[in-house]
Image 1 (cartoon, rainbow, N blue to C red):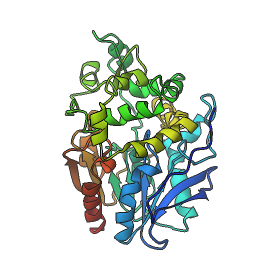
Image 2 (tube, helix red, strand yellow):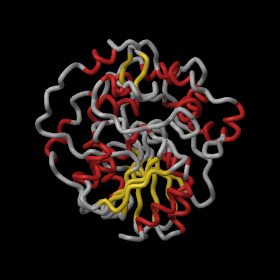
Image 3 (cartoon, rainbow, N blue to C red):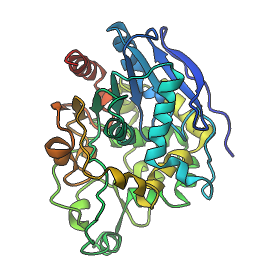
Length: 369
């Protein structure tokens, strides 16, 4: 059963409060800097929180920005969303998540956002914000590739990718579809190793600390190509995510050396997800694998014309997990892409693993606007 999420312990200068976003949510946000300054909004992904941005917020505020990071729909201390697997899944579709963000801007008393920044699934929201409402969202920083609105006409697949994955010599399944199943939330919420160790292994495996992360471009959306990715993306058919990442649990020495996510910081994530479970975030995946994002097809072919940049980790398989998306983002989706930078020594959690480098790149981008 869900419980209220705990309040984070924050550095001096970061404030926490709740706002009514006008779309059914009491949205919990972290903010730094004075209202009235140019607004920068930071959108987290899965399984992260507004807290994931804590180390970037004060430097951005010191540079003259009003910096806001919300717990998005389904996460953390934000309330008003449906955690029932059989409940209101449609409210988690991307167009409604854009509506959540516009409502947040309005609740802040603003009418423009100097830059919206999105990481992981937050990049899908940020990208669609800039695509659909460039009059509000005046610049975009992506930390996960965004391939634009879905096409009106989708080519028929050559084969059933799920059957193809399952028929490999080592039977596999795609984590997006696993996250869409009824059992995924319980598997992770009640992981046999406990929430803290589950999240430690999950964050570790997708970081540059895990020595086996050597991402590269994939030729296409085929079972043999997808199976080149680690098991946290293309899972063994008979395992859940808790068992998958347990195999990569770091040693005590590696954990002690992890300065970008200390155990006391991880404890906040663990306490939050122990209280809320993961179903809110998993609803986002259900909308991706199901029919709920079809309304975005009305924007098919539309480009992002506001200034954009991309900051990622060189050891992040997320850059290449959707074959062609990284290239399409640069060649046809974003018409004013100022730079693309993949940081050495960073995996998927780039804004946490390489905070100083990300801060310098983001400030460099903001100063060009």
